[in-house]
Length: 359
Length: 271
Image 1 (tube, rainbow over the protein chains, first blue to last red):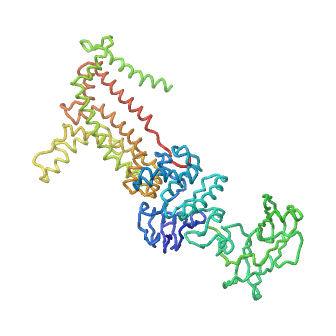
Image 2 (cartoon, each protein chain N blue to C red):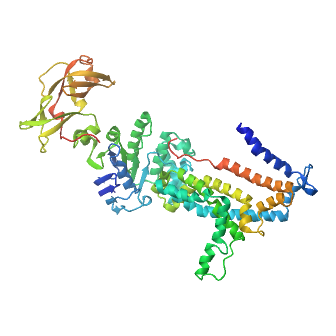
Image 3 (cartoon, each protein chain N blue to C red):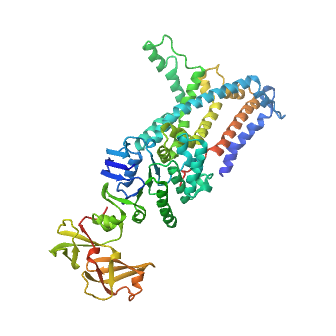
């Protein structure tokens, strides 16, 4: 039973969600990723039934649920601040949807206990919701939404209210939960690391537009524009003009020099951006005869244990470079102010048409 | 400083009344310092118990009506935003910026035999004789309802406002329709505020004497009237004090219930 959005749009006057087409397969862990105000929560609310779309249809399997109220969709939501019912204890909160359906007492008991066990809060069944920690409340919200095995589970930035350690732990648990329960998980987040770690596929949104949909690897290595590239991970950008055509490569002319650019099979305009990921660049202590070489000066060094981050000053700009510990320890240590060379492999650079930055 | 004023102006008079309620009345309207519970016993006698009962029933009906009428108003106000809400609140309270007696006379001019309502109905030929609303129990009921309505709207509105709308969305998300959401989520969470608000309308209603006096006429004697007449007509201050004492007990019960029920619960979730 796939979830399909067909030309779904929403007009709020001050904000518009452009017509969106999306198909999400059963059991997928799908992330809506983007900066604040990009429309990702709007999409979630449209699917949940809390707002009617201005146009388009929403299908679940072969049911057109575009105009169904929230209680008639087989879709449940984990709200950002959980919205647990304060007048009911944990057990009753979780049992809520089952009681509405008139499920038998024994069946309710069994199902609630099962889901509480799955999210590891069995012992909290009799607790009042006001006596729960953030992490516990979140698990209750999950249990409540999953107890009757909905087709789709919507999660609105579920981890944003948790402290970092708990957040990391819950990320893994969410993924496991998705696999175990078999429901489709649709999560809204602005944390690109979260999206990369958890998703089967990601949709990147900006200003009400869906820019790209694809698996994490594709979004990371093959972003559709410099915004997506910069949002999904740290980047260094070079802007320049394509000059010579060398068959399989172009040369790129820019203020930093001349570099080789790989052809990616699509027609490229003259003005392009070259996106270089910090981890795909190498710091050379001495000049070598490499294909792409830039001279620069180390501004500052940040030792992070498994890797070291360098800010390097280049003519007219600054680059971030990551050096893994295994490499760094084999070479001469660097200090701020040292003159060094940066290089990268031509095929590691991402070639994109130039796009204006800023949200 | 505040304690001094509180003691002087509130506590002392109350204690005096309480003290008086245990005394006996003598001829000429004086008080004999012989402690007795006879006054309280008399409160429970058939004659006065009837008045008690009549008053409580009427106050109860009026409170219930305030609830039925007031709830939709409070609901609308809670849902309204910005200007709409402000206008609504102002409209609700404009009458209360006028004098209380004037408000009562407003009712008289509306519902009296020569009032607006009767004149309209008569001129349209819908009635042959004017409706007798004033100087009946119904008139008193109307006066109570009109006068106390905003005082019940406010606590209901306040409770509704504090209720996180996301709880309603969560309920619907989990399968509840509007009716189910109302009874299972809204009502349990505003129960406390509504109950307390009702109590703080009911208690004063029981003690009311101006409204029954002006709108009920001489034949409708309610508890308030009886109590006041004990002081000013019958010169039986101890007995009047006993009635006042019983009313105070009612008030204390209300305060205690407020203490138990009136807390606003936080939204469930992040503590």
